[in-house]
Image (cartoon, rainbow, N blue to C red; front, side, top):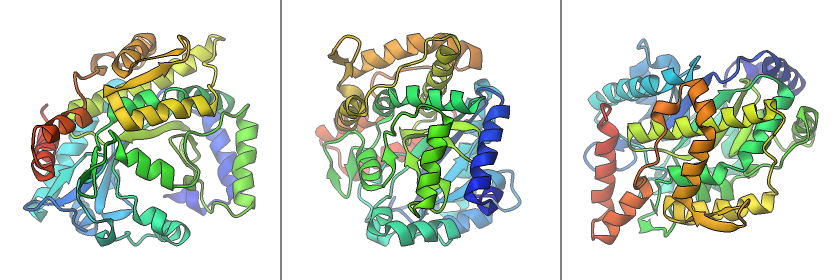
Length: 385
């Protein structure tokens, strides 16, 4: 929420188009959201303002922001010219944040949900942006105690950015399945691999899988319609799981659960960025990724929420479900040329089991939610891998 909020909707939309036309392809930024935890109980603690104050005057200050609730903090890499630079900056930001919170008696959680926290005890931070969302959404925003990982990839050309948006819709279920880390919420095993996604995308308006758009002009017309009808008061109230960002010339992939392990966070960012660059290059070569109907993507979206990497996803070329891990591995192969171009290849990896699978396995072996979450918090502390 910077100077762009001072612009009128018309000015913001016009500026966004201009920025897309002038963008440098495939510069990348990553945002990670972390839970702020009491170091003894691992309960959520409303300490964001203290963390922010501690950051003042440090190198982290410009990269640290609030994210809805006072028991959450977000750190950003900032724009990296090559994806090859992103993993190192992600490690640096995590290390800087840990150094900042330790003297405050705070630890960091990075699963998509907190396993037992009571949403009624979390305070909305006092900023104009979040006050507006609180007034607008009420119960919907109160319940959103979730933690994600977002990837911004710059795309040159406004119409080209819409083509990338259209293609990336198809791959949201695969990115989600790989990222799933939130089987536990409100003190129960939800039976889902990504309870975060169910809470966020099924509660919020203008969320989840967007429609495909024929052009920037059609997308712009829809955004203007939302402003004109009073449906939104700022562009960030379009919460789609992939969206063109109107303050930056990027396509933002927002579907992922937070990642306890740094290396898996880096691999997830590499996968999302490589897919985005691959869709752009396919468009450049005259073979654009054809957007699937919304109803078909939703079938895989639910499979990813429910079963994550352990389940099956429908391969629409084959017309049959295949193991999610196989589907993702095939996408990694498809994305390798673009991954090489942007410097992401060394970081691409599909784990034997992702965070959700490992937690569920421990639960089924008799571990308590407290034991399992403590293990995830310790993994988050291991910056060196």
